[in-house]
Image 1 (cartoon, rainbow, N blue to C red):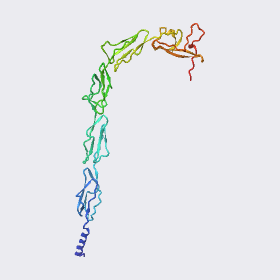
Image 2 (image 1 turned 120 degrees about the vertical axis):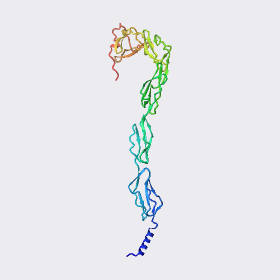
Image 3 (image 1 turned 135 degrees about the vertical axis):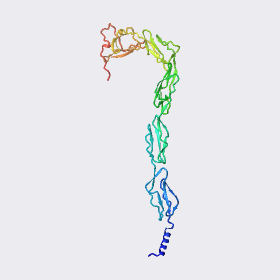
Image 4 (image 1 turned 90 degrees about the vertical axis):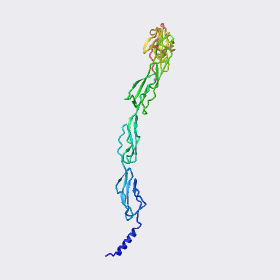
Length: 349
């Protein structure tokens, strides 16, 4: 039987043994706080771990009691961030993100031709919700294009309210007598404005000058304007060098200045030539003269090789030069062979 004295002594020794055994400051866990937080704790005191706002506890205990050993139990508690829901797809745009965890943010961007109607970013809150609410990508529109002075709007596709979408075009046309400088088409840009508009200016041209040996006709007006036309012609035996009709251009000049060129008289009395790919008698084909610009090919002899070749001659404003290599034979020299009857020279390799 254990004596009361022994029990008294044992109890005393036990209290002496555990005296001074306190629990130290508890382990710090990421994203967690301890209540109450002190430097040391007596055996039997309790502490509680709380996850910080935006985090949830997972695994392990949240409440611990300081044991008589002074050593806190192993703590397996973890505080993990809250997850926000999938942010969805931004129509006509894109959502950029790394994770959907608190406290990360996501950003929004719209495709070309659309703009953000709402915030450019959102944050995952402590409650696991996105704030503010995601935006929408609205189409960029342009107001009705201003019509330049002295111009009309010839093509335009308006929406309700007369505005139009990005990428759409407006086409302008100048009033008569006015010339357009710049592009006739303006485009609604991604910034909601129009590209540069054209300018319409009044343009006058001087009265055309009558060519020598010819005539010119134009509208009977006090002044000639942009797009007005004039027609030219020549007297007999003269050929018009240039277009028959000219137009007043946007720079105040005529599109061309035709002139009348003289015909050529042919001094050769007998020769076979090539004209427009055919052999002809020059004295018959051009008995009334050769018109300015017409061209023929004369036959010439290569005496060394005993063959023939051709050289060109052209009527240029009354002047016609016969090739020096051409030899015209008299009709009495019947025994001589014309160059046109001699076999052609072979082309050099």
